Image (cartoon, rainbow, N blue to C red; front, side):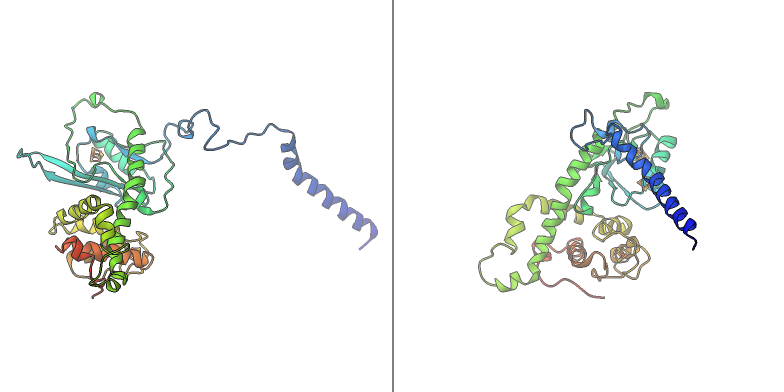
Length: 316
Ligand code: SF4
Ligand code: SF4
Ligand code: SF4
């Protein structure tokens, strides 16, 4: 290499480096625009987002007709709506469940479109987005609490008369409830099942202590009984509803490791009785096995305390 080429090469290297760093250096002399989230803001970030932002879903239950159009429109079965006969004796139907699994939702908006086009606009995206949770259970938004019944809204012909409320409060409320109640509920079920892990055997015939059946029974008997009650109320003839309930106890990744293409196909097989093995969900691991085994026993009519005894029912 000639000496002139050598210095030319050094010059070009220095020039391109300085050009590349020019943008970086320019920031040394600009006003900082860092937003210190989530505190030190004069208003919540959700209020700064565009109106049509597709954030967490919510349902305004007092204008929901229970038509299930949103449930049918969802391509990945995030929405579960259960209708029951009015126990008061009228021939009307009522809603017993309206769950949205925000952990699965891909925010496509198809459910919202279906509701706006053909019903009342009760389901909608909000500008709420903070849904961080340590478990997937904390992202299942329940717009009807277990045991409650909600009457169906009769929509007026003139859609402008539908009393559409503020966007956001229903999602915030559902998120708070989900974070507070759902993981704890499954934790209680796991504790009940954990009695099979050997501690009960060690204490057989002796006084029950921490880790034994006495733990869930004494700490939150009301909650665990409510959940077990909800499981047993699932119409066993309605395989689809039971399959959806069981699906919530799998890892819900549709990975196929259980031998079925999707989670719902695995739980449908369990719900219909053609597969009795609750241990096939690989990503769900021991927790999914324990939860599914426990749920299958409870749904099968085993009393709660008895369901928590014995070995996990791994049969094929
Ligand atoms: S009214 Fe809307 S939110 Fe309610 S069930 Fe029908 S489509 Fe779903
Ligand atoms: S936004 Fe899409 S994925 Fe989410 S619940 Fe609605 S239809 Fe299902
Ligand atoms: S292994 Fe678990 S997560 Fe994967 S498809 Fe089967 S049930 Fe779903």
